[in-house]
Length: 86
Image 1 (tube, one colour):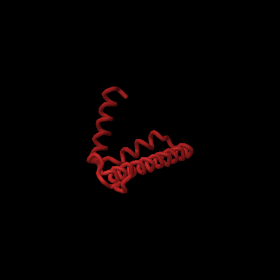
Image 2 (cartoon, helix red, strand yellow):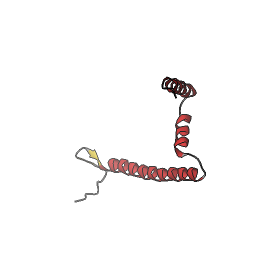
Image 3 (cartoon, one colour):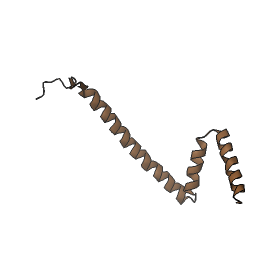
């Protein structure tokens, strides 16, 4: 029973606005899925080039951090290693 008023609020909900939000989220989820696939392909390429993917991921994580934060973590890691006799 469409009265040609799709944009009208139904039960206090603006149907067009809600549909727009849902469709935008769905598009972004598809993009994220595609990006995830692209990233996996790059890690596969890195592995086939002889790189250790776990180490590459650690480097990516470190590059996101501030230098002082990285230095503090490395210092603590060194202290903990020495405490364990490593």
